[in-house]
Image 1 (cartoon, one colour):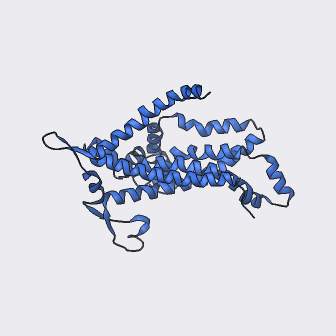
Image 2 (cartoon, one colour):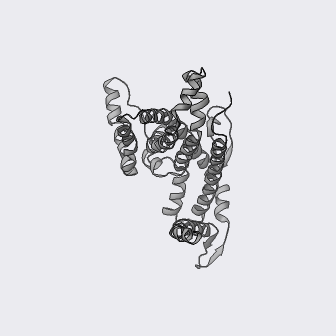
Image 3 (tube, helix red, strand yellow):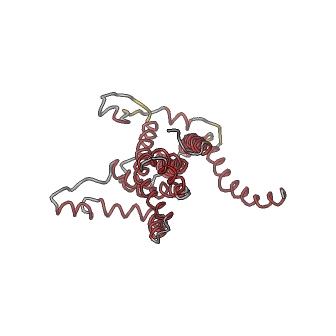
Length: 304
């Protein structure tokens, strides 16, 4: 049995080694090596020093400068990282606020065996079948100063409103692209909640609000944590959305890495940024997964 299991896992091990471990080792190699003018390879930590030294900018994270008037100087890449984190967190929270009611509606329809449940689920998943570049370009046509939305607002005597090349446009693009990744994990958990649990809560005198707060939400937390993982991480690392909807004026951490590789050809600094970002992602995922595991072990239901 063990030999048969080992044979079955062998292709997976090869896949992980070739497409996961090997690229990571290559990135780690580039992060600590460089070539001198004579073409000789040597060990260096200059890439990491470039991240935490060099030019500084005034940090305006969470309104530290614009609201509180604090003049805090930080390295450029630290400012870019915090900017990326703030936009990704906001996009994740908005996706959660929008995605949870949709997932709950889909789950209720599925449990009730309504024919519309599968169709609505199909509409939720359908945008994921399109190329991300095309989906993002569509928002350019909608949000540009002469686009459909501004034309409609102009007919109402409003605008034009600057939707693009700012936090709003980038955040909207992130929410649109990653919202299905929030809906599906929550839906997959909600649809497994047995109706008898809700009936028992009702028989014990719990109203809809209390049932939602004490039964449904706690039981759905593993799906919420999975959705947060699946939205926060790609939103944190994306470079396509800020590049298009930010008009090249915004540099998030994904854009910084892309420019180091493709424009500056500074593989050392680009790889160092990648390694640090990977460490942050792994730590964040471990924290979220640990909370999800704790909720699963507790059975998901909180004490009143």
